[in-house]
Amino acid sequence: MIPSALPLEGLRAVLAPSALRFHRALRNPEAAQAVCLERVLRSVRGSQQAERIAGFRHLRSTRDFQDAVPWVTPDALVPDLERIAAGASRVLTRESVLRFELSGGSSGASKRVPVTRGLLDEFQRALSPMLFEILHRRPSVRMGPSYWSISPLARKQERTAGGIPVGSADDSAYFSRTLRPLLSRIFAVPGDVGALPDVESCRYVTLWHLVACEDLTLISVWNPSFLSLLMAALERHGDRLAEDLRRGVCRPPTSGAGQDDAALRQVMSRMCFSPRPERASRLRDLLRSGGSARELWPRLSLLSMWTDAQAAHALPAACQRFPDVEVQGKGLLATEGVVTVPLFDAPAPVLAVRSHFYEFIDPEQPTLRPRLAHELEQGRTYGVLLTTSGGLLRYRLGDLVRVEGFRQATPCLRFVGRADAVCDLVGEKLSATRVGAVLDAILPEHFGGARPRFAMLAPEWAPTPSYVLFLETQAPLARLSAAAEAVERAFCEGHHYRYARELGQLGAVRAVRVVEGVRHYESRCVALGQRAGDIKPVDLHRLPGWSDHFSGAAA
Image (cartoon, rainbow, N blue to C red):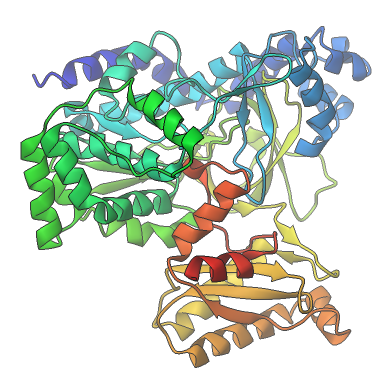
């Protein structure tokens, strides 16, 4: 047996009982969800949050819970999170907060999410069946190491004023202590890479370890564009990487800032690099031939990444570098909790029915009582409310999911977009779902049957409030202008947008050509406080300032 397969066989055995309990729970989601709600209520009992809810100690049924506890949004939790960060205890739950994780922050800076032992146990109830599914159903993955992009790149470890850590210590932080030693033996890239001070050095060191790993079997990232950017860095730094592999050193590009360079040297001192002349030669051959990255890893058998909503537009660019490698779409996993996990034979990722307590809002009738997991209807779209042992009660996640079918009696849910992504400069109320539908319908008509590699709409305040359509394409400017005019006509079908245009409050959509749109989009998102490892592509970005950013990047 290949040495790498030994810990993976052991890992599969450890995961099997949790996977069995998960599959049994799929038969009766109502009963499984009742257990989840009872567990959460126990964790919250005795906290400051419980004291604010009238009759909390008497809550027994799901209906009692829905009647007594209002929905909350991230902003509503800020005062409680500030008290926790300052050192207060028993604020949202009785349990201590182990650390804060930072949410993805799709349109700006990230928000802190408190992590407790109970919340980690709930993550484990979803992640263990997911990982078992891969190892059990795809035996080839058990024959070598894997690359899991879990941690954010270039994370900076911090502590709050009350001494609570911010961010995970390593890539296995969401798994149990039992599993971490096994996982550390199958990760192709050490967790320390995420502590490097800037994105480019993180990518370079990641690539050193990946190229050195000739028996890589699995690549798991969140966004397909993340994988495309990683492979673009391989092309950009290929010659330097080959020389470093030959010599057994690693010289990531530096920012030139003294503080960052010192941090880089400190992190690098914890890693070992040995000469890999055969891999250096293989990389040079690939660079000369212009072949696909797939040739570096002949045993690579599975790519795991987002495939739904906006991520679908970035999927072809990532997959073309890895021909004939199977792609598995990820489920819906937020920093706050897990919603769905992927199963190979299911019509869509399956509700993580043993993890948290879920409710589902009908967007067309939001005042009605939210439905429960066993009440969902096939073909319908819902917004997600999340209740977790981390202290989030009826937390509006902002994600929309569509029921694609059922695995036994449990719904299979496909992520279709964000419910709260609405831009409103002067009353036009332009939603991300509307923008995505318009771009999907119009852009292929103007650009040879496909959307440009990068396409994003964003607002600008000057010289007059309006929207700019940023496109990465070599098409003539006349075609860009025609596309912008078609998008404008489609938006004007909406009452609020058309009225704002008629009043002269809003200017017409205009198109701007960009170069390396994905890379420059990522650089600004990082500057805004997001994490490179989980930056999401968007059809509509609600923050202005992108014209200046792209023009500066081009300069």
